[in-house]
Amino acid sequence: MFKKQRSLIGLDIGAHAVKAIELTQFGNEVVVTAYAQNDIVSEGARADAIVDMMQGQQFRTRRVATAVSGKSVIVRYLTMIQMSDDDLRNAVKFEADKYIPFDVDEVVLDAQRLDDRGVQFEGLADNEMRVLLVAVKRSLIEDHVGLVQSIGLQPDIIDVDAFALGNSYELRGLMSAGMEQDDRVTALIDVGANKTNINVLRGGTLCFTREIYLGGDDFTSAVAKRLGCEVHQAELLKREPGDNIEALRDAVLPSIDDLGNEIHLSFDYFENQFDQPVDDVFLSGGGAQLPLVADTFEKIFEKHTRHWDPTEHLRVDEDNVDIDALRANAGQLAIAVGLASRLRKD
Image 1: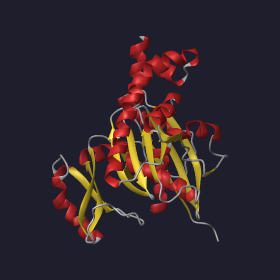
Image 2: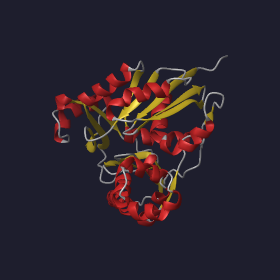
Image 3: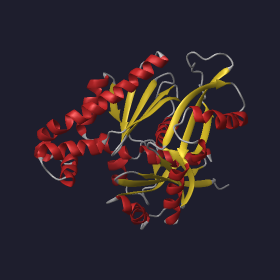
Image 4: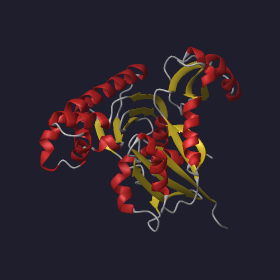
Protein backbone atom coordinates (compact mmCIF):
# COMPACT_ATOMS: atom_id res chain seq x y z
CA MET A 1 0.00 0.00 0.00
CA PHE A 2 1.19 3.51 -0.82
CA LYS A 3 1.34 5.95 2.08
CA LYS A 4 -1.03 8.88 1.84
CA GLN A 5 0.87 12.08 1.05
CA ARG A 6 -0.24 15.63 1.82
CA SER A 7 1.73 18.84 1.46
CA LEU A 8 1.24 22.38 2.73
CA ILE A 9 3.41 25.49 2.43
CA GLY A 10 3.82 27.68 5.49
CA LEU A 11 4.15 31.21 4.07
CA ASP A 12 5.41 33.76 6.59
CA ILE A 13 5.13 37.26 5.08
CA GLY A 14 7.13 39.52 7.35
CA ALA A 15 8.01 43.19 7.24
CA HIS A 16 11.41 42.72 5.58
CA ALA A 17 11.49 39.09 4.48
CA VAL A 18 9.22 36.34 3.23
CA LYS A 19 9.83 32.71 4.19
CA ALA A 20 8.24 29.55 2.80
CA ILE A 21 8.66 26.03 4.10
CA GLU A 22 6.78 23.06 2.71
CA LEU A 23 5.98 20.10 4.93
CA THR A 24 4.76 16.83 3.47
CA GLN A 25 3.16 14.10 5.53
CA PHE A 26 4.01 10.52 4.56
CA GLY A 27 1.84 8.39 6.83
CA ASN A 28 2.83 9.52 10.33
CA GLU A 29 6.12 11.11 9.24
CA VAL A 30 6.45 14.84 8.50
CA VAL A 31 9.22 15.82 6.06
CA VAL A 32 10.59 19.20 4.93
CA THR A 33 10.23 18.90 1.15
CA ALA A 34 10.95 22.52 0.10
CA TYR A 35 12.27 25.74 1.60
CA ALA A 36 13.03 29.27 0.37
CA GLN A 37 13.19 32.82 1.64
CA ASN A 38 13.73 36.25 0.15
CA ASP A 39 14.13 39.84 1.30
CA ILE A 40 11.33 42.37 0.73
CA VAL A 41 12.93 45.54 -0.60
CA SER A 42 9.87 47.79 -0.13
CA GLU A 43 6.27 47.67 1.07
CA GLY A 44 4.98 47.59 -2.51
CA ALA A 45 7.30 44.77 -3.54
CA ARG A 46 5.90 41.97 -1.39
CA ALA A 47 4.21 40.14 -4.24
CA ASP A 48 7.37 40.33 -6.36
CA ALA A 49 9.46 39.04 -3.47
CA ILE A 50 7.19 36.02 -3.07
CA VAL A 51 7.15 35.28 -6.80
CA ASP A 52 10.95 35.52 -6.99
CA MET A 53 11.26 33.26 -3.96
CA MET A 54 8.99 30.57 -5.38
CA GLN A 55 10.58 30.51 -8.83
CA GLY A 56 13.12 27.78 -9.29
CA GLN A 57 12.02 25.97 -6.13
CA GLN A 58 10.35 22.58 -6.45
CA PHE A 59 7.30 22.97 -4.26
CA ARG A 60 4.87 20.07 -4.50
CA THR A 61 1.76 22.13 -3.85
CA ARG A 62 0.30 25.61 -4.31
CA ARG A 63 -1.69 25.29 -1.08
CA VAL A 64 -0.48 27.70 1.58
CA ALA A 65 -1.17 28.53 5.18
CA THR A 66 -0.31 32.11 6.04
CA ALA A 67 -0.94 34.41 8.97
CA VAL A 68 -1.96 37.91 10.00
CA SER A 69 -0.82 39.96 12.97
CA GLY A 70 -0.73 43.50 14.27
CA LYS A 71 -3.19 45.92 15.83
CA SER A 72 -6.06 44.71 13.64
CA VAL A 73 -5.83 41.31 15.34
CA ILE A 74 -7.42 41.06 18.79
CA VAL A 75 -6.90 38.07 21.11
CA ARG A 76 -8.82 37.80 24.38
CA TYR A 77 -9.14 35.13 27.05
CA LEU A 78 -12.70 34.86 28.39
CA THR A 79 -14.44 32.97 31.16
CA MET A 80 -17.80 31.63 29.96
CA ILE A 81 -20.47 29.18 31.09
CA GLN A 82 -19.87 25.62 29.88
CA MET A 83 -21.57 25.02 26.53
CA SER A 84 -21.21 23.02 23.33
CA ASP A 85 -18.88 24.18 20.55
CA ASP A 86 -21.88 25.06 18.35
CA ASP A 87 -23.43 27.16 21.11
CA LEU A 88 -20.06 28.79 21.76
CA ARG A 89 -19.77 29.99 18.16
CA ASN A 90 -23.22 31.58 18.42
CA ALA A 91 -22.58 33.06 21.86
CA VAL A 92 -19.38 34.90 20.91
CA LYS A 93 -21.24 36.83 18.21
CA PHE A 94 -23.25 38.48 20.96
CA GLU A 95 -20.43 38.74 23.50
CA ALA A 96 -17.64 39.99 21.22
CA ASP A 97 -18.56 43.68 21.27
CA LYS A 98 -17.70 43.78 24.97
CA TYR A 99 -14.10 42.79 24.30
CA ILE A 100 -13.01 44.21 20.93
CA PRO A 101 -12.48 47.85 19.90
CA PHE A 102 -14.04 47.36 16.44
CA ASP A 103 -17.58 47.07 15.15
CA VAL A 104 -18.47 43.36 15.13
CA ASP A 105 -19.60 43.67 11.51
CA GLU A 106 -16.04 44.70 10.55
CA VAL A 107 -14.34 41.59 11.89
CA VAL A 108 -14.07 37.86 11.39
CA LEU A 109 -14.60 36.09 14.71
CA ASP A 110 -13.44 32.73 15.97
CA ALA A 111 -13.49 31.16 19.41
CA GLN A 112 -12.14 27.98 20.93
CA ARG A 113 -12.40 26.43 24.34
CA LEU A 114 -9.01 25.92 25.92
CA ASP A 115 -8.16 22.27 26.43
CA ASP A 116 -6.59 22.29 29.88
CA ARG A 117 -5.02 18.81 29.43
CA GLY A 118 -5.31 18.30 33.15
CA VAL A 119 -4.14 21.84 33.96
CA GLN A 120 -6.50 23.70 36.27
CA PHE A 121 -7.33 27.32 35.43
CA GLU A 122 -7.50 29.33 38.63
CA GLY A 123 -10.85 30.74 39.76
CA LEU A 124 -13.11 28.72 37.47
CA ALA A 125 -16.39 27.40 38.82
CA ASP A 126 -17.46 23.86 37.92
CA ASN A 127 -19.84 25.18 35.24
CA GLU A 128 -17.31 27.58 33.66
CA MET A 129 -14.66 27.24 30.95
CA ARG A 130 -11.81 29.31 29.54
CA VAL A 131 -12.30 30.47 25.96
CA LEU A 132 -9.90 31.99 23.46
CA LEU A 133 -11.57 34.70 21.37
CA VAL A 134 -9.94 35.99 18.18
CA ALA A 135 -11.20 38.89 16.10
CA VAL A 136 -9.49 40.03 12.90
CA LYS A 137 -10.52 42.97 10.78
CA ARG A 138 -12.17 41.61 7.66
CA SER A 139 -10.26 44.08 5.47
CA LEU A 140 -6.92 42.72 6.70
CA ILE A 141 -7.89 39.16 5.82
CA GLU A 142 -9.21 40.22 2.42
CA ASP A 143 -5.97 42.06 1.63
CA HIS A 144 -3.91 39.07 2.73
CA VAL A 145 -5.96 36.60 0.70
CA GLY A 146 -5.86 38.90 -2.33
CA LEU A 147 -2.05 39.12 -2.15
CA VAL A 148 -1.64 35.35 -2.01
CA GLN A 149 -4.14 34.68 -4.80
CA SER A 150 -2.63 37.37 -7.03
CA ILE A 151 0.57 35.33 -7.35
CA GLY A 152 -1.16 32.06 -8.14
CA LEU A 153 -1.14 30.46 -4.70
CA GLN A 154 -4.13 28.89 -2.94
CA PRO A 155 -4.71 30.28 0.58
CA ASP A 156 -6.16 27.32 2.48
CA ILE A 157 -5.61 28.66 6.01
CA ILE A 158 -5.34 32.17 7.45
CA ASP A 159 -3.88 31.89 10.94
CA VAL A 160 -2.47 34.31 13.51
CA ASP A 161 1.30 34.62 14.00
CA ALA A 162 1.15 33.90 17.72
CA PHE A 163 -0.80 30.66 17.22
CA ALA A 164 1.55 29.52 14.45
CA LEU A 165 4.42 29.98 16.87
CA GLY A 166 2.70 27.70 19.37
CA ASN A 167 1.93 25.11 16.68
CA SER A 168 5.59 25.03 15.70
CA TYR A 169 6.58 24.22 19.27
CA GLU A 170 3.83 21.61 19.50
CA LEU A 171 5.19 19.91 16.36
CA ARG A 172 8.64 19.90 17.95
CA GLY A 173 7.24 18.04 20.92
CA LEU A 174 5.44 15.51 18.75
CA MET A 175 8.57 14.81 16.74
CA SER A 176 10.67 14.41 19.90
CA ALA A 177 8.40 12.57 22.31
CA GLY A 178 9.28 12.98 25.95
CA MET A 179 11.73 15.86 25.41
CA GLU A 180 9.89 18.30 27.65
CA GLN A 181 8.20 17.71 30.98
CA ASP A 182 4.43 18.00 30.58
CA ASP A 183 3.98 20.32 33.56
CA ARG A 184 6.69 22.81 32.65
CA VAL A 185 5.87 26.37 31.69
CA THR A 186 7.55 27.43 28.45
CA ALA A 187 7.71 30.93 27.00
CA LEU A 188 8.18 31.31 23.25
CA ILE A 189 9.61 34.69 22.20
CA ASP A 190 9.70 35.45 18.47
CA VAL A 191 11.49 38.73 17.73
CA GLY A 192 10.52 40.02 14.30
CA ALA A 193 11.43 43.23 12.52
CA ASN A 194 8.79 45.50 14.04
CA LYS A 195 7.07 43.36 16.66
CA THR A 196 7.74 40.58 19.15
CA ASN A 197 5.33 37.71 19.81
CA ILE A 198 5.11 36.18 23.28
CA ASN A 199 3.45 32.82 23.92
CA VAL A 200 3.35 31.17 27.31
CA LEU A 201 2.34 27.50 27.40
CA ARG A 202 1.63 25.45 30.50
CA GLY A 203 1.40 21.72 30.07
CA GLY A 204 1.08 22.28 26.32
CA THR A 205 -1.88 24.64 26.73
CA LEU A 206 -1.60 28.22 25.49
CA CYS A 207 -2.29 30.39 28.53
CA PHE A 208 -1.02 33.81 27.49
CA THR A 209 -0.16 35.64 24.29
CA ARG A 210 0.90 39.21 23.62
CA GLU A 211 2.42 41.31 20.84
CA ILE A 212 4.98 43.98 21.75
CA TYR A 213 5.71 46.56 19.08
CA LEU A 214 9.47 46.48 19.49
CA GLY A 215 11.82 44.35 17.41
CA GLY A 216 14.84 44.14 15.16
CA ASP A 217 14.12 47.46 13.45
CA ASP A 218 14.55 49.20 16.79
CA PHE A 219 17.95 47.56 17.20
CA THR A 220 18.94 48.71 13.71
CA SER A 221 17.74 52.28 14.30
CA ALA A 222 19.71 52.44 17.53
CA VAL A 223 22.87 51.35 15.72
CA ALA A 224 22.34 53.88 12.91
CA LYS A 225 21.74 56.72 15.37
CA ARG A 226 24.66 55.86 17.66
CA LEU A 227 27.19 55.29 14.85
CA GLY A 228 25.89 57.97 12.49
CA CYS A 229 25.37 55.65 9.54
CA GLU A 230 22.53 54.84 7.13
CA VAL A 231 19.93 52.28 8.15
CA HIS A 232 21.01 49.75 5.51
CA GLN A 233 24.61 50.05 6.73
CA ALA A 234 23.46 49.56 10.32
CA GLU A 235 21.58 46.42 9.28
CA LEU A 236 24.70 44.99 7.65
CA LEU A 237 26.75 45.87 10.71
CA LYS A 238 24.19 44.21 12.97
CA ARG A 239 24.48 40.99 10.96
CA GLU A 240 28.28 41.04 10.65
CA PRO A 241 29.83 43.34 13.27
CA GLY A 242 33.41 42.20 12.69
CA ASP A 243 35.75 44.43 14.68
CA ASN A 244 32.85 46.72 15.65
CA ILE A 245 31.32 44.36 18.20
CA GLU A 246 31.90 46.67 21.18
CA ALA A 247 30.45 49.69 19.38
CA LEU A 248 27.49 47.55 18.34
CA ARG A 249 27.00 46.38 21.92
CA ASP A 250 26.98 49.94 23.29
CA ALA A 251 24.55 51.06 20.60
CA VAL A 252 22.01 48.26 20.82
CA LEU A 253 21.96 47.22 24.48
CA PRO A 254 19.48 49.92 25.62
CA SER A 255 16.95 48.75 22.99
CA ILE A 256 17.44 45.09 23.94
CA ASP A 257 16.97 46.06 27.59
CA ASP A 258 13.72 47.89 26.74
CA LEU A 259 12.33 44.84 24.95
CA GLY A 260 13.53 42.45 27.64
CA ASN A 261 11.90 44.49 30.38
CA GLU A 262 8.58 44.55 28.49
CA ILE A 263 8.71 40.77 28.13
CA HIS A 264 9.56 40.46 31.81
CA LEU A 265 6.39 42.40 32.70
CA SER A 266 4.41 39.84 30.71
CA PHE A 267 6.06 37.02 32.64
CA ASP A 268 5.17 38.77 35.91
CA TYR A 269 1.54 39.06 34.79
CA PHE A 270 1.37 35.37 33.87
CA GLU A 271 3.04 34.25 37.09
CA ASN A 272 0.64 36.36 39.19
CA GLN A 273 -2.38 35.03 37.32
CA PHE A 274 -1.40 31.36 37.38
CA ASP A 275 0.79 31.18 40.47
CA GLN A 276 3.47 29.29 38.56
CA PRO A 277 6.82 30.57 37.25
CA VAL A 278 8.02 30.43 33.66
CA ASP A 279 10.61 27.64 33.53
CA ASP A 280 12.19 27.97 30.06
CA VAL A 281 12.44 30.66 27.42
CA PHE A 282 12.86 29.77 23.73
CA LEU A 283 13.93 32.49 21.31
CA SER A 284 13.25 32.68 17.58
CA GLY A 285 12.86 35.30 14.85
CA GLY A 286 15.37 37.33 12.89
CA GLY A 287 15.73 39.95 15.61
CA ALA A 288 16.68 37.30 18.17
CA GLN A 289 19.66 36.11 16.14
CA LEU A 290 21.80 39.02 17.31
CA PRO A 291 24.22 37.30 19.74
CA LEU A 292 23.64 39.89 22.47
CA VAL A 293 19.91 39.16 22.74
CA ALA A 294 19.92 35.73 24.43
CA ASP A 295 22.54 36.66 27.03
CA THR A 296 20.87 39.96 27.86
CA PHE A 297 17.42 38.40 28.14
CA GLU A 298 18.72 35.63 30.39
CA LYS A 299 20.12 38.22 32.80
CA ILE A 300 16.85 40.17 32.81
CA PHE A 301 14.57 37.13 33.16
CA GLU A 302 16.88 35.10 35.41
CA LYS A 303 15.60 32.07 33.49
CA HIS A 304 17.20 29.56 31.13
CA THR A 305 17.01 31.30 27.73
CA ARG A 306 18.07 29.72 24.46
CA HIS A 307 17.53 29.72 20.72
CA TRP A 308 15.70 26.80 19.15
CA ASP A 309 15.49 25.22 15.72
CA PRO A 310 11.90 24.29 14.74
CA THR A 311 13.22 21.94 12.02
CA GLU A 312 15.75 20.00 14.11
CA HIS A 313 13.57 16.91 14.61
CA LEU A 314 12.12 16.86 11.09
CA ARG A 315 13.53 14.75 8.28
CA VAL A 316 14.66 16.91 5.36
CA ASP A 317 14.51 15.95 1.68
CA GLU A 318 18.12 16.88 0.96
CA ASP A 319 17.67 16.21 -2.77
CA ASN A 320 15.33 19.19 -2.97
CA VAL A 321 16.30 21.38 0.02
CA ASP A 322 19.52 23.33 0.57
CA ILE A 323 20.21 21.88 4.00
CA ASP A 324 22.96 24.40 4.81
CA ALA A 325 20.68 27.36 4.07
CA LEU A 326 17.86 25.76 6.04
CA ARG A 327 20.03 25.23 9.13
CA ALA A 328 21.60 28.69 8.86
CA ASN A 329 18.17 30.37 8.86
CA ALA A 330 16.21 27.90 10.99
CA GLY A 331 15.95 30.32 13.90
CA GLN A 332 13.80 32.58 11.70
CA LEU A 333 11.40 29.83 10.59
CA ALA A 334 9.30 29.10 13.67
CA ILE A 335 6.18 30.83 12.34
CA ALA A 336 6.54 29.35 8.83
CA VAL A 337 6.97 25.83 10.28
CA GLY A 338 3.98 26.34 12.56
CA LEU A 339 1.85 27.40 9.61
CA ALA A 340 2.90 24.40 7.53
CA SER A 341 2.27 22.08 10.48
CA ARG A 342 -1.44 22.74 10.05
CA LEU A 343 -1.44 20.00 7.40
CA ARG A 344 -1.65 17.55 10.32
CA LYS A 345 -4.95 19.13 11.38
CA ASP A 346 -6.61 19.22 7.94
